[in-house]
Image 1 (cartoon, rainbow, N blue to C red):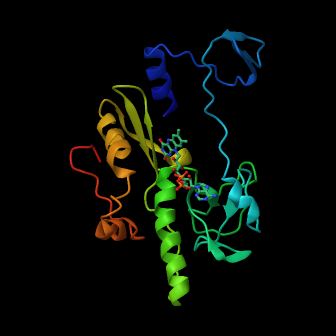
Image 2 (image 1 turned 180 degrees about the vertical axis):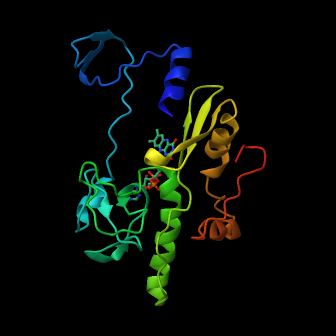
Image 3 (image 1 turned 45 degrees about the vertical axis):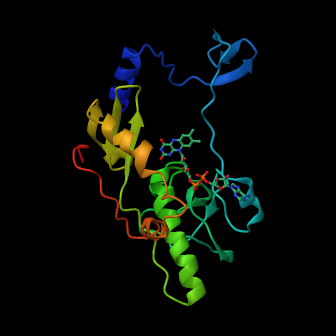
Length: 217
Ligand SMILES: Cc1cc2nc3c(=O)[nH]c(=O)nc-3n(C[C@H](O)[C@H](O)[C@H](O)COP(=O)(O)OP(=O)(O)OC[C@H]3O[C@@H](n4cnc5c(N)ncnc54)[C@H](O)[C@@H]3O)c2cc1C
């Protein structure tokens, strides 16, 4: 995705400084690790995600973002009455259970702090918590869909199917924009509070999302 992203940013007049860290912010600008000073009254910081502080109260292993390490049923192994999902939980998205998410260069695939993972995780964790109470078998969390879609301004977006080194750009530019718009404006919203049937349907662990025709997928 990177070459296409850089092309679009260049066309939009956005200057990119790869491999450069921000070392200081003050009222009139920022200082970078190369010693450059950028004058601005409006610095916008978008880096650094961390799990909600509530996770600190739950015993068990955490990853470097403070997320609870959960098992294949999204249960906390050292606090078995607790299931975790979304940004608070780190789960394997592949079948191999033996690896450490904090190991740099680890080949293992883990959930990311993203809607794509949070939505199915919520469905599985909810299902399994209810199944636990009813004495029914739990379902193993599985991530059916993996991809990345990035908005690149008013007219452009980019969509890559798959993850990591295997990701393949499937749509880009104006062709990807309707898909991104549908995700942002429709897909990520839960049903209305009074739509009980819709809520049960949306919470079903088996993903029944249908991408509308004409969005390029
Ligand atoms: C600016 C921004 C842009 C993003 N863009 C994208 C994107 O384009 N694509 C993508 O995939 N992901 C994106 N994400 C990430 C995505 O929003 C999250 O991964 C996703 O919302 C996680 O879902 P969640 O249900 O785990 O947590 P949340 O959506 O954060 O929901 C957690 C809820 O729990 C509540 N809560 C927290 N603590 C407590 C407590 N102690 N008691 C009770 N309630 C509590 C919070 O108020 C919140 O309502 C973005 C995130 C941000 C901040």
